Image (cartoon, rainbow, N blue to C red; front, top):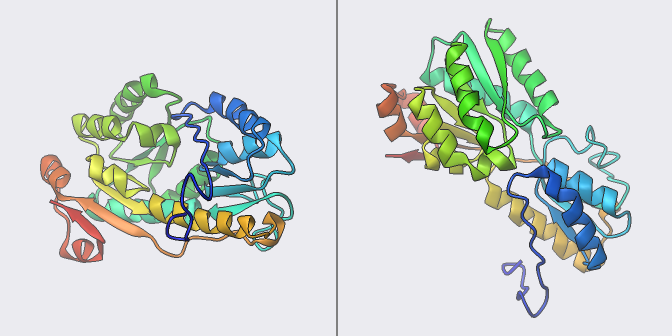
Length: 274
């Protein structure tokens, strides 16, 4: 917002609400923001956007990271959202197939891939389906492993190891993002090469990350807020789709796991953590 010429405290005020991965808080937060009569609600995940939409049909809503806004019932179409909500979508279905491909480039002999999932996240069924479709082509079995809260993370990795998973894909989720260091530690402890969507995961110690940048998603979301402040209606603002994806690899983690990144993979990487 500052880059767009706004001064916080002078031109606008932000009412922050953080669920910290606890989805049951979101409905109450959305209702509270509606009672405060804010001018725009910005939601950073599918569940948050859904709860905001349930709470108001009049206050404009901007989502900054949604896997399937049409399938989730948030918008009528990407070109014409049609209600009080619009924003920036993600490309989880396409990205997860690429994540599997990249992880297999580092770990060629894979027969089982574990997908770490928060079953309370409404987007995960379509993403798992896409992963299963990509894995099936190469005869790879997908193990869907649930973790609804922080207490279930360690048992989740224990079950992956027990079921002989070779690699792990961490699906995007607010809970997992807040616990990324713990997840990276559990992956290392169980000697499981893992990949996730955001570069923060690789920075926390995961082997790799591939996806959009959170900062890019928020900046694009701010552009929607700017347009709405200037009189635009969400119904007339098309949903934006991602155009740039980033690959980060963690060389330290690869060394710990006894893996070697190929020169071709290193050349493709946008960042290498030494």
